[in-house]
Image (cartoon, rainbow, N blue to C red; front, side, top):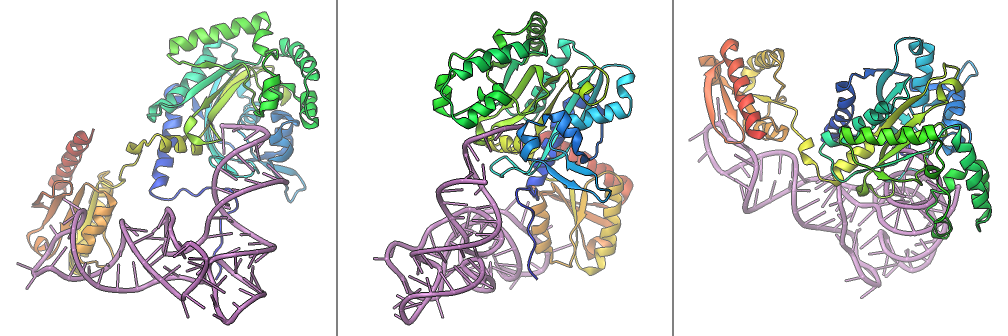
Amino acid sequence: MEAINAPKGVPDYVPPRSRDFYTVQEQLSAPARLSGYEYIELPVFEATELFERGVGASTDVVQKEMYTFTDRGDRSITLRPEGTAGVMRAVIENRLDKGSLPVKLWYRGPFFRAERPQHGRYRQLQQVGVEVIGSVDPIIDAEVIAIADQSYRSLGLQDFHLDLTSLGCSNCRPTYRVLLQEFLKRCDLDQETRARAELNPLRVLDDKREVVVAQLVNAPLMIDSLCEQCQQHYDEVREYLRVFGVSWNETPRMVRGLDYYTRTTFEFVHPGLGAQSGIGGGGRYDGLMSELGGAELSGIGFGLGVDRTLLACEAERLTPLRKGILDVCVIPVEAESRTQGVALLVQLRRAGIAADICVDNRSIKSAMKVANNTNAPLVLIIGPDELETQSVIIKEMSSGDQQSVLAEPTTLIPQLQEMLSTLREEQS
RNA sequence: GUGGGUGUAGCUCAGCUGGUAGAGCGCUGCGUUGUGGUCGCAGAUGCCGCGGGUUCAAGUCCCGUCACUCACCCCA
């Protein structure tokens, strides 16, 4: 039979790297949980219109990167390309916006974009995200950014930086937009870029081609055209960021791909990933809730890329991520000791000790090899001799020391637990 | 959607100007008497991505195709 391959651009995480992936996902969400954010579990597909309205029909994401299909009821369904729109929909639908504000939520899971895959860019990507709805307090902006920052730090990442700017609001951005468009009209640009200047002039600022970049040196910047409220808000955000102990780069030319962002906008960048250097990003969105039929509430959030963060960890060679997952490996010598071995295994697992048993009647030599490969710090050997004396051999793998002890749960289990905890202390 | 690169053992790869395949790691076994990691010895494993062409002969050249990959675009 012919083997079947995974669809294009979707990653498999297999052991042992899957352990790292899992650890990264856990660590990325830990700071949000520590900050009182509640978990929200959402569907992976939504009505297509949610993203058209929420993310913005003019964005590349909506125009050419969505997995859209018609279901059996003839409804247009789309696999979610990002998280914020779905969270807003659920908040509105479940009336969370009518309760006490702000609503602080975190989520995680897969997202889908039909892009051409490359290093750090997949068609199914995993994100950990956070959204705060119903507050414009700049403390919230700073907190959200600080949580993301802490997420990366808790993994031990160091070589990343935070890009920060303000994109203004519905008062000041339109004015700036016209200003920028007039500037762009005087530039020598190709047709495609001209079209973009009409549709979304800010995006032109992000162009990486030298011919374009050279012409944009003196382009007007949003940051210089902020209205009084936006300026004050941005000043305060930065003030609180200092209190949170977060440092950043001012990047007035930063542009994000989703239409809903206003005011505070940020991106975490890691230089070790190649072209796809953004490991997370987010910002404030003033109009999104009402655009999706909810109350006039502002929100702010971020999405952190789990896949890319893992790549960043690997780029920094953060190997302490990888630990064995077993505490103890049980080795029954000779077939007659298998039953007692399983009985032992049950005791261990019930006591919360991560344990496995060598099967398939391997020779003790070969079983030791298998046990060694699991990285379990302790091995329990039980054979005919031990059956006779109702004992078991505990072997400490790193030193090779071993001792025979009574296979009595009330004494064996505490002893193992003590050995494991001293071993853990030695390790750290 | 556009361009470049690569496809040879489980993994990482070597195979110069064409003569039917190699290394390292891993795996299996052995180094006697119930014990892994180091070391030594032995061994197994390949439709050389797929299809066609040139040739006495192709992993090696040509064409096509598929897959993977990197970059542009865009983004986590």
